[in-house]
Amino acid sequence: MIKKILDHIRTLPDFDFQGKRAFVRVDFNCPMDRREVADNTRIESTIPTIRYILDRGGKLIIASHLGRPQGYEEEFSIRPVARELGRLLDEEVMVLPFDLSKEDPHTWKASENRILMTENLRFFPGETKGDDNLAAFLAGTADIYINDAFGASHRKHLSVYSLPAYFEERGIGFLVEKELKAFCKVLKDPEKPYTVIMGGSKVSDKIKVLEHLLPVADQFLIGGAMAYTLLKAKGVDVGSSRVEEDRLDTARRILDEAARLNKDFILPVDHCIVKTVDRPGEKIYSRQIETGYMGVDIGPETVRLFSAFIRAARTIVWNGPMGIFEIPDYAVGTNRVAEEVSRSGAYTVVGGGDSVRALRALGVGDEIGHMSTGGGASLKLLEGNGLPGINVLLENP
Ligand code: ADP
Ligand code: MG
Image (tube, rainbow, N blue to C red):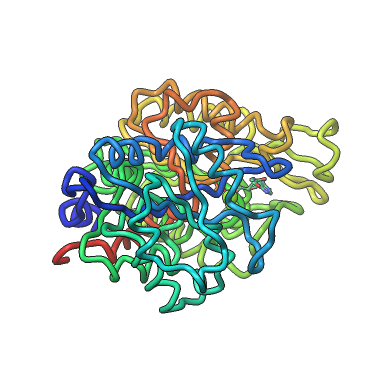
C-alpha cells in the first residue's frame, strides 16, 4: 500500500507554481501559552514547503486547525500562529476574515499578498461535518491543492478529505513526503533484525498495528500499561495495574498469533510498582506485583532484556512510552530504552505523540531516523491501510 502511495502521488517538483496560488493544508495545531505559540516545531517543519512555492513564483493560502473550539471562539484565533509564521519567514501573513459570507474567493486568489491564511478551520462547522459551500469557497481561492498536514491526514475532515477533489492539480508537500518515505522504509522491505517497541496506555489503540506488524517484524518488546493487559491474559498477577478487562480475549489472540508465527514477543519481567500513582517516593522494583500494587514502569531486568534486542536491531519502530513517563520517577524505563534506541545503529521511526514528547524531553531526537509529527496518523499508517487524506490524492490508483 505505502509503496503504491509514493509511486502514485504528486510531490512539489511535479507542479509549476509560477503565477499561481496554492492552497496548502498544514498542521499548525501548536501548543499555545496565553495566546502565543509556545512551541513552533510544527510551523518550522513546513517552512521548506512554503519557501519552495514562494521561490518558484507561487503564492499561498495556508489553512490549519488549532485546538478544539466549538465554532468561533476568539481565544482559538489563528492570528498568533500567523504572526509566528510571518516572523519565521520574514514575510507578511494576512489572515482572512472568519465570516466568509461577504467574501469573494477569487478576489483573495488574485490578491497581491503572497501569503494568506484562513482562520482556524475548526471555526467552520463544515470542516468536521462537511459543507459544499465552504469547500467551494476554499477551492475558489487557489489553483493547486497541497497537503502538508500529516498529523491531520487520518481524519475525514473537509480540508484534507473532500476538498482535494475540487482541484485538478493536487499533491503533497515536503513534510508529508518525508513522513511517507520514513514509514515506507519500515513497512516495505525493512532491514532485519526488525524490532517493534510498543507501550503506552491501551492495547485497544494499537491492536491493529500489532496485527499488521506481527508477520513483518522479528521481535516485539512490550511495555507501558498495555503490557499489563497482555500479562493478565497470560494468567500473570498484575495487582491493580491498569488493565483493559474487555480486551483480554484480544490480548490472548495476539499472544497466540505471535507464538504461531514464532516471533519473540517479550513482556516485562520486572516492574516499578507503587500503591498509588501519586506517591512516587514509595516506588519499589519487583518481579511480582503484589495485591494492592500497580505497575507504572518497566524494571531494570526488563530494560536489560530489551536492550539486547535493540542493540542487534537494524530496523526499529517505537510507539508508546514504557511507563507513566510524565512523572520523572516512572520515566526511568522509557529514558533507558530511548538512550539504547538512539545509540543503536538501526533505522528508527518513532510514532505517537507521547513517545515523541518523551524523546524530545530527553534531547535524543537528533539520533533518531524519523520522529513522526502525527500521533494518530502514524498509528493509522502502521495499520497498513494508508490515510484517508493521502489516499484521495492518488493519481490513477
Ligand atoms: P503515544 O501517544 O506515544 O501513542 P499513548 O498515548 O498510547 O502513547 O500512551 C501514553 C500514555 O500511557 C501516557 O500518558 C502514560 O502515562 C501512559 N502509561 C504508560 N504506562 C502506563 C502504566 N503502566 N500505567 C498507566 N498508564 C501508563
Ligand atoms: Mg498519546
